[in-house]
Image (cartoon, rainbow, N blue to C red; front, side, top):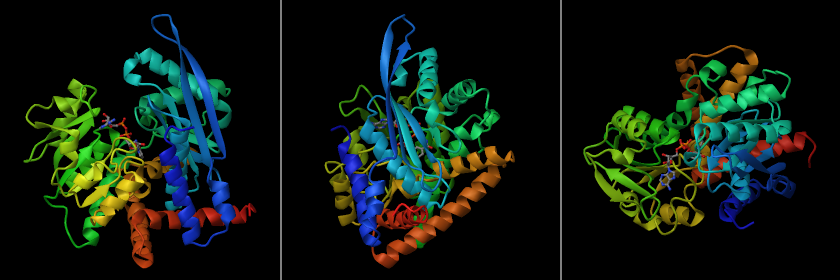
Length: 423
Ligand code: NAD
């Protein structure tokens, strides 16, 4: 019950506030404050050494009011029911904000995949699909990659799903797949690219350019790496990276280089050595020193709750782009906004992932495949339109971007509920 209750209550209170802001029927909140379906299972796996281990797994399908529930599956040692519930509620908001014919879902498996062999990971992935099979499908619930999952894992998901369903090649049941299995070009890049686009948009909105603005990034995984790559291409300078470090007291530590990193050098080190912290031409700094750096932009791209009320007062960045889901606690948001920091919230800043997953789902259904450039052009055009709308609502109603995003999304969800006769 207790685990991650704070993040769940925070999302629920954002739903409540938006229902009040828009003077919607209270039934809208009552219907949406919990997921439509939450599955919790125990998965026994034969390990390489002959022993059997049991792993907890979850799938929350929050809402299918506007379409099949959609959202990633993470493999992480702290996954719990409240976390997947909260994250699935955020997915519903993202899909509605982008006006997609999709709802929100999220799944997770409680495991540190680094402690497993490749065969054990595959076995777990397949058993996850076996446990959830009755509730998966391109018109029911559509998983995708998230923390510690990737196209390779989606490949195992697809293979198991086809085997379980009389060979039905319903490829749109999963997104973020390998390209040869119906994946979309530009999906891997999509979340980081969208985050970089959002940051660029915010600067241009104030009549400033990104040229030589400095940025620091927490988490150099899928989202962090591509955000760093595209922001660098837009002219900004990456000066610090914070990543997990089991040897550090806080669980993470960072590297700093005032003259700026070459993003591809960092990626090469990560691929070769397993961590960007092995880059030895940079100063090694602590987690606390990282957050207190005098940079223009801070991009949390790791996990939830990494910026709390203890870290927030030290932050000097003027703009935070939330690549991760829920990286800033409510108390931290208050402290940062009092200092005049602009926060581009997760539901907007990292929505490029679900947007291009949607393009993948459409491509699987139509059988017509887009080029890399076509996908990125569509993503840029759509995200710019949504950013325009959210910034306009925020300005009009004098609310922050998170509240403006919730207002736009909740209006759509309320309309959907009304036309389906739910209230
Ligand atoms: P990933 O597994 O590829 O990367 C996560 C990174 O965070 C890794 O570099 C890891 O070392 C680092 N990390 C983990 N714990 C840390 C800690 N305590 N301190 C510092 N760094 C830490 O995962 P990802 O797909 O990049 O996802 C990152 C975040 O973005 C998650 O919150 C995820 O839900 C969110 N997100 C991902 C997508 C997507 O398309 N992948 C879409 C939307 C949102």
